[in-house]
Length: 136
Image (tube, helix red, strand yellow):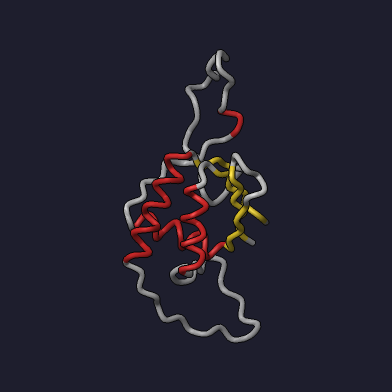
């Protein structure tokens, strides 16, 4: 299906992306200098004054699977910066028109994401931290 991104501070602000678009955006961001920090998970957050969790702390979470993950503010802003660089260098690729009823392979990530999707995500990232939910 795809992914739903939800702003941490304003849960009614959401962005829904299909799988090829989200994967394409992540690939493009990395190619343009984004160094992903990994997502955080809600159980890792402690209230002020609480003891640290046993087990050495959190590991980096995924942007494409697993449980709900939180993209932290710094990571979201870095993602937006990389996508802005990608927008400046954007050169659309020709893609073969899909025959009606043709289903893409599961591993098929498609071509470059659209300018609209990239622009929306840049604005969304500039609003702050956001949750990633994998829609099945």
